Every structure is written in C-alpha cells, then in structure tokens.
Image 1: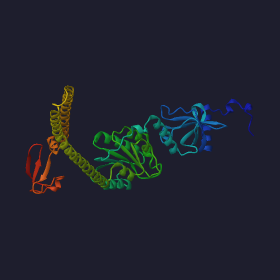
Image 2 (image 1 turned 60 degrees about the vertical axis):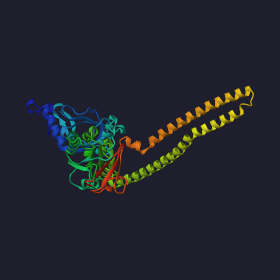
Image 3 (image 1 turned 180 degrees about the horizontal axis):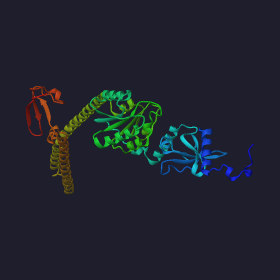
Image 4 (image 1 turned 180 degrees about the vertical axis):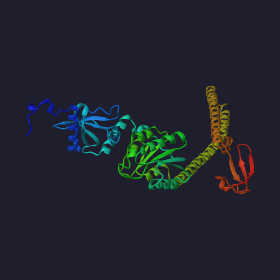
Length: 429
C-alpha cells in the first residue's frame, strides 16, 4: 500500500528535476502519439527565420498547437505558406525541453482542398502578372524567315525529333541548334534558365529559340513553372516560343514567352514558314505584278497615242489662226474704201483686237505644245534609260532578257544604255 507523501521522510522522497520531468513527458508523448496528420488554419507565420526554419501555429475552433518545420523540409514545399490558409500537416509531436512546450515538428504539408502544386502555380502566376512579365506590349514578333534557330529541350525523346523533322520539312535551309537540358526533376529549371542565358550571351546571331518538351503530368512539366525559368525568358534578347506538353497543358513559361505553342510540333510550325507555300505565294505575287505592269503599260501607251493626236492639233492650230487672220484682213481691205470714216475706224479697232487675240492664241498653243512635249519626254523609254536603266536583248532574236535563264553560254547580247549600246558575249550561264 502506497504511503501518503506527507508521511515520507525527506530521504525517502523520489525527487526529480524539471528537466527530467520534461524529458519524461517528452518521451511519453513521443511514444504515445508518434506521427500524425493534423488539419488546421495557419497563424502567426512570419516567413523563414534566419536559419531557414519555419515557425507557425495550427489552430481550429477548439485549440491550437505551435509548429516548427526545419529548413530541409521547408525547401521541399510546393507552395508558399500564408496566414489564414487551411492546411494538412504531417509530423510528430515533440516537447521543446527548454520551455516545456509541446509542438508539432512538421515534415510535410499541403493546402487543404487544392493540390500544393496547383496552389504554387496560381501564387507564382499572380506574382509575375503583377510585375508585368505577362504584358502583351512587351512581347516581340517572331522573325518571318529566321536563319538560325535554337531548341532548348531534352536531346532524346519524341518531342525533339518531331520539332527537328518539322523544321527541316518546312524550311530545309534553316540552321538548327539543339541545346540539351534536363526537362524534369531536380535541377531541370536551373539548366533551362542557364541555357537561355548562355544562348543570349554566346550566340547573338540566333533569330529565335523554342523552349519546351513533350507532355506529362504537372510534376513532369513543373520545371517550366519555376520562377527562374520565367525570369530567364523575360530577360531574353532572343524571341522565345514556349512549346510545353499537350494542347491542354498550360505553364508559367507560356504566359511569359513571346509566343505560346500548343505542342512542340506546333512550336516548330510557328517558328518558320513553309517554303513551298512561300514559293507559291511569290509566284502568285509575280503574276499579279506582271498583270499590273502590263495594265499600266497599256494605259501609258493609250495616253501616248492621245498625246500624239493632241500634238497634231496643237501644231496645226497656229497655221489655222494665221489663215483666218489673213482672210479677215483681205476682206476688211476690200470693204474699207466704201465705208464711212467712223466705220473704218471701228473696223481698224476690231482688226487690232483680232490680231492681238490671234497672237495670244498662238502663244497659248505654243505653251501647250511645249508642255505636251515635256510630258512625252518624261514617258519616253529613252528618258528612262538616261536615268541609269538599261535594256538587254539577244542579238540574234532581239528578244528582251527578263531573267538569266534566257541567255546561253556563247550568246551575243546587246545592252541599250541612255547613250549608245554595249555588245557582249555570255561566258557562263
């Protein structure tokens, strides 16, 4: 039978220190509770301390418990903790001996009701959007016909093969550089960002780069959701096409890049035009230009014909006026002797006015003639040659050469200049 404490002599009492008692409590709790999942609301969170550890409180309507998360565990979190956030924490109950305070040592944590990666994605997206990294006004156009293109992607797998094949098919002359990087797992984001920076510094002649990979889970694509990759794309001097995953996948790099492609293959299509289509377009434009030039030439030829008929009328007009003046003068002289003096004076006055009017008409006709001659001279093919152009014909057939394929080695050609001509022989086709 146990004795009452007050009946024991001091030498019989079992006395322990506060530290011993706290350690006993600590061991008892650790043995009884061990690892648990705990749901609650975060509070008293102030961000990482100097050591990198996280300290906060989990609470609900009934109680609260202090929590600590060591730096190594905190660095693996896939979201940014915030006060008021509902979370589920995994860890073990511990007693902090110096203060006799029990706490939860958290080893893992995730948001309650939403995936941690999705939350981290939304948090980073909101942050970068506020900083202006997604602004449409800063995005640059992709060069129409790039000469050199870089692929920042994994050197193995279907994605890089599809992109290279598509690029070669659409634009065979394109110089393609594959910059090999990890596209998932630890260190992948840092490799992608470093590759983008290195291409900008060491290869300034690159016209455009495609950054991407094939499809996968959100974990597989996560490197393209990292802030370091987003900022590397944002600061890139070279225009960037983001081509990550499948059509339904969206990453942070898609929002920052100058152009978002639905798939890696779509990225290659957006990067270069199809040369076959381009050749067809050029042929269509050439045909339209030839029709327009022919129409303009026909118009000028019609105008020249009109000017020719006008010249004939202008040249003839002075002679017609002179003949009419001579006729009137003769008629006046014939009728003057029999007229009274006042009528003769009036006739003389009218004759003077008629002569003056005739002179004005003749001068105006000469001015029109000079103006028409100047217009004709401006439209003259000879005048065009005088401005530095030339016309080259085959000597044998007098056929005008429109392209080099018309002349064969040994043919004699005649080049008409503004003054004189040059006769040459074709040495090589």
